[in-house]
Length: 593
Image 1 (cartoon, rainbow, N blue to C red):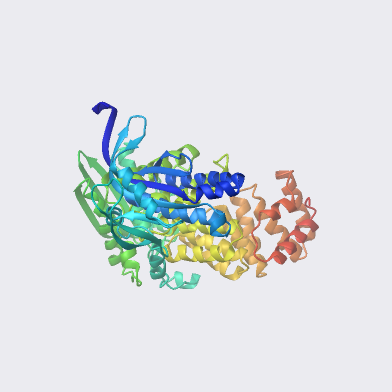
Image 2: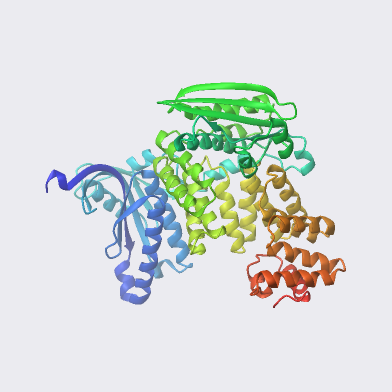
């Protein structure tokens, strides 16, 4: 083999083998083969989700490599969890259980993708030491992953392995409660606020940062830097942060600071200017008092590009100080997270943010590709997998995916990678909460959605989704209050915010507010079906049956195939009695069964 036919490099190697495979085949070939196929699907899915590559799946064995040890161990943990879930609680002797070994070592990789070397051999020997359903890792792997995975490592001492010249120290990897839960518990110290209490808090809108030229690279950096500051401030419970959907409408818009502040109900504005010159970044940021247009402070930063990554922290700290924002317990650690310090990863992150702001299917794909690079280059950060999860979620719910079920599966996989991490920021929780709700897992949906708001109290999306989940769980008063908070955070909001508010107010018999919110949703989106369904219920409850029938006719004209029964199947109400009452009201207006 010539030097041009292979390369030698350091990778993390995962080797797995089924325990008692021969005996299971002898007992029931068909069931064992079917179980093996299912197991292979779990392996492939989790390996690929954690940026690994399957090398071989011969017989009942699996061999894969990863660029980083964190990916290999995360995959191993997820695989064992997934395999346990597919066993359906069958006795150990009747189900396929795998031993997994993980090692960090050198391999020889041929041009056709096959790998050889002592690194592969050590991983294979380690898997033989693992318990069925367990994971064995070398000391090198334990040292590489540190505390970045949801596992504790139990030292098993040194072991002399067959055909390996030196003894290898190894550990059992035992799954633990997600590390990210600690961040959630710290964040839950933030007390839930009512709408009246929110009005007492300082409010700020971060306007789109301007650039010296229309150069795409400069625009990407400016958008990314603004998003960095936005994401950091969204974690602070003592501040109202106007949402990006609202502030984006002011890009290249000729308005005075007083006009912008008044239109967004923001007490303060943050303006920025970015210019790249060679390898240097020049950034100017100003904090402005909205009603008077008085500049509270202006800061100029002239940094090398790789040093400019620290600017986000400095800007955020100055805003908190200037506005005299009280940081609650745990806020400090969550805000100054310094999550992405890899310059190339930060560049991909900014590029992905720039694409995602375009709000188009093709741009969402481009954003996902950039965010996947973030996850690869900065595996210790939750930002990459969180952002990838969001792109799949948007695919599913914005009608951009031909297979929305598959998009949700991928969103779940990436969200589950982010949630255990210590720097998790709550957006992955929002994705998972919605998925739990769709599965009618109401208690899980509530817990995860409340975690999301605890981590991102200033996020309109997190608050609105919690309100939506409160509504379906039979807590309409809390739902209405939560959605009002979300609408305060982003005056320019999606139509569904108003629909959830209308439905919640209807359930607590606040008919005029429910009607006004539903009417507002129809004005925003003239063909909105859900808003009209709420209007029908309000009309039936307030003696306006003729108007209810008129609304039913509008729905039939907008969607001739509309069926109350099919609609009801998509509604994840915890109280089925409430759903029966609602469907009866809709049918009484003349809608098709």
